[in-house]
Image (cartoon, rainbow, N blue to C red):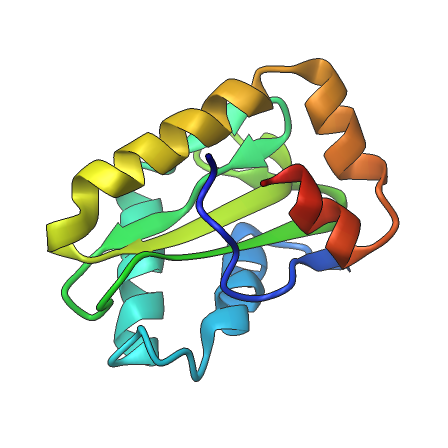
Length: 143
């Protein structure tokens, strides 16, 4: 099973840069009780992205941070209306799956991301994520 979303996904996000996509996607978690310091969490995600951006190909990226600023795993998603260049290789990304992971939940995070990555290797799954019309349909695909 893929980790449940902590907020409805952000669909048809209009953004021009990788940082804007990540910041707006992470913004879905602003005020989340599982995050003790939202700005610190966002900074950790952006720092991790600069060091080694987790870009899967297939138009998908998995920005994340492993930090004690998160009490339990948090997970949100966004779909960009047009591809946005990610990482030093400027790979096109339209689907963003953002995680926050506390140090004591790394094994659960790895299991959740493994399940997600397996699904993201299926062209039909990617196509569905790119074409569903509602946040509820998008969320249902991740169950």
